[in-house]
Amino acid sequence: MSYFDYNATAPIRPEALEVVVEVMQSVGNASSMHQPGRKAAHRVEVARRQLAELLGCSPGEIIFTSGATEANNLALRAAFTVGSPLVTSPVEHPAVLETARTVTAESPDDLVLLPVAADGLVDLEALDQVFAARRGGVVSLMAANNETGVLTDLRVVAKAAREVGTLIHTDATQVIGRLPVDVTDLDIDLLSLSAHKFGGPQGVGALYVRRGSPLPHRPLLVGGGQERGWRAGTLNVAGIIGLGAAAEAAARGLGEEVERIAALRDRFEHLVTDTLPGCRINGRPDQRLPGVTSITFHGVPADAVLAAMPEVAASEGSACASGAPTPSHVLLAMGLSRVDADSTIRFSLGYATTEAEIEHAVRAVKRAVMQVRAALAEPDGPR
Image 1: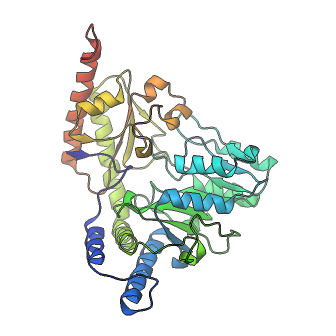
Image 2 (image 1 turned 180 degrees about the horizontal axis):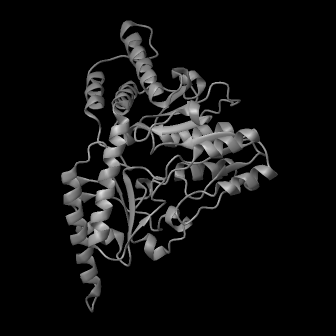
Image 3 (image 1 turned 90 degrees about the vertical axis):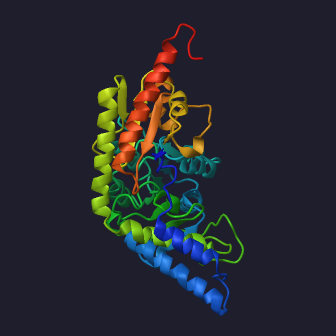
């Protein structure tokens, strides 16, 4: 099996798996005052420091959550105020888009969707036009698109937002552990992430909240007041410690790993497009994640290609939309037709991807596409 679905979830890193198993075999509620509880609380704070080092922030600016979806909800509910704009884009993850629509349901004019170019880049000049008309509020743009890997220039966003007193949130789920990130340098207020995207366990994530940001606590869960009132409930000690171990592992040699994965991605793209006519790479080629490629196989249904190559794990798009009857909202916003959107497969590589997997996947993709094309060319269609 060649695994090419890191954007859905990455294989758990050995360092994370080891500590998760160890903690699951022990006992201790991090809110308890006895020795096992204090030990659990200490390990949680170690993990908080490990993640803070990866993000370039203070440990006290991190709130642990169940994942990026919860973090996105917390961020936008805290940052949005009726009467102020909530600026985002039509290519965001549903965890942002649906939250934005929900919090602005009673004031729909407050929701502003920026246009997107054919290469997947959000029109940041349109952001200036929004800020010229309305001040304050919050802008939420993902650091990297989960389907195309296209990157947002957050420094440009932050500079424009600061001038008009607008808060900045980014869903950085696909970037953390894959590209260097320094939240202080980026000058952002809020950042969401999930551990399982960079080799941590599923079901745990975090929200970065810049110290000094004028944000009220609007928790989704109330109760014991854990995580400084942002997120009540018993801490997921095993998950949090696994997140910390994955963050520390991802930070080691990150620059070299970025180059290695980008080279593997480029080799995969060249081999596929050189041997299969009628293919197109989606997204700005010089401004995207190193391990992501979105390929449209014109006229060939993506679901049929995926079914014809069970030895390759890839995706039609966002994992949260698997089985959805509608094509990718990201690709449609970029101007692809419904037919082309339905003929697009996302391949995403990561820290454990090997050259052998690249060679194996290329052979499988070529065989599957040719098989489906041959079936479609039959007089009675595919059987």
